Length: 154
View 1 (cartoon, rainbow, N blue to C red):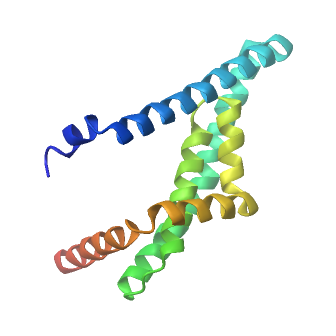
View 2: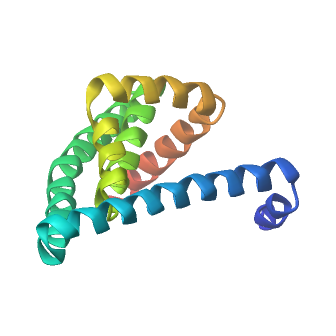
């Protein structure tokens, strides 16, 4: 439906969730700014900013290859007709961790690193499976439709 976003804007529970998420993000950004200011006092502004840039570059290389590998596994499962919900959640967790690592800030880097490390990723995956369990079959069907329509064209 083309007007889903409009219905979303007038639903109290969705608005509460949106503003709660924005509040959480702003707290992380404030903590990131505070740490960057404190660190730049000890190391200098340019070195602190260089550390931020280096973590983003490393994240793109390391997590990018992990995401690529997990996406390939998702595509292989879809081609074989297997539905593995945990594979979708694992890939989504890596994507969120990668986004947090690429965003500037040390707090977001720490959270992104925790999402990349297997023990902590397992906890977040358990939470995501509970939240997304009703939507994952639809995502799986969409992926299968996309793969098989691309295979017929190619």
